[in-house]
Image (cartoon, rainbow, N blue to C red):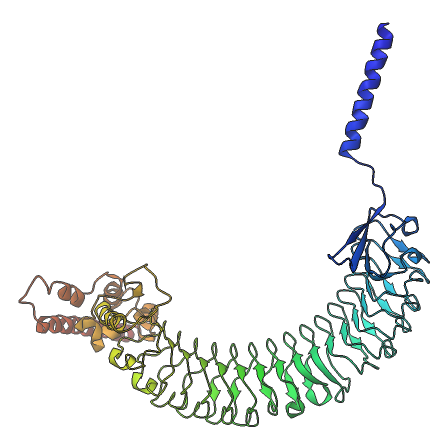
Length: 584
């Protein structure tokens, strides 16, 4: 009796364990479900999950005359056998993404007479074999991206005369032979980006709207496509070293950024509205941008902008020359740029600007001259910029701002001149900007706190302005960095400038340090610089409490120290003369 009970208990426990295992690890069964995609039931999709063999699929019955999609993704499929989809004859879009497909047999897509889109991306295909897709006469989109494809057979796309888009990005294709796309007379988009492509023959690509060859290993572009027309040609992030625009197609947008281009020739043959040449090694440009409206040349090695560079570039709307090494801009460089509205010249080595440089830029709205070495602006530099709204001259070496020269810029809304060495500002002139000025950035200059307080109060009292870039750290007035310290007579004197913080770097000091390090004179110099306060500075610091100390006393103290220094020097030289006589 006990034995029967114990056996029953064991059976019950085993049953419970099996049930728990089934709950935790349910059996993976292949199933296809049908879903309508809109209220009118004109679109539907069949989703098949947990598929290990395509031949086992049994699609559910679906109403006829539907625009029907089929998705078989994230399964364990490693091969597509012949006649795998004969039961899905009405399918117009087939998703086979994110599987493990390595091979496709001939006849795999037989019966899919209505198929227009085939997505095989994110699988493990190593080649595009011949005559696999020939039965797909209605196919318009073929996506083979993110596989391991190394070879594209010459007849891979034979018979696919309706193809509009082929995506082969992020594979391992090193070469594409001529004639591969010969039968694709309607092809508009070809994407071969992200491949180690070294050779490309685009024979037969007469209908393309976009050719994507970015992120490849192409080092030259020798194809003569000058008679072709397309919307986009993308050759960015490759290894091109030179560009001959006489061979380029007539494209609306050309992307050549992030290459190794050093020379650009036949620029006058370029018929694009946008060209990007940024992040290259360009030092010189031959020709002009005739019909281009947007030019990007930032992050190159340009040093000189000649008069002829933009002489026939009347269509240019935006010009970016930032992050180069430009130190010279000839007077007529921008002559004729009647439509230019945006000009970037930041992060260069510009120190001077010809007052007539911007004379023709009457449509200019944005001008960035920041992060250069500009020390002064000549009167009239901005006279003709009647449409200018934003002027950025921050991070330069300006000591003064010719506000009167800005009066002609009647549309100015934003002035940015922080991080310079400007100490005074004519507020009354700035207040004449007819109410348009809304942002003025003046932080990190050589402001005296009293001066900046007067400026701030006048500007705020007369108009509503923003003051960006403010910081409460250090001495400041409402976030605008300044100093309340006035320079002493000693600091402003020639002697004060002689004994400044860079004195120890001078050849004078270094000579005495090497030759007379143990002498009294050197100890005097070294001690003078090492002390927190020099004698004249100590005298000045006593001035508020000792009213009888006049500037004559300070001058006398300085003079005495100079006399002592001279006497010590003469004594040292006399000792050296005696030593020479002794050794003689």
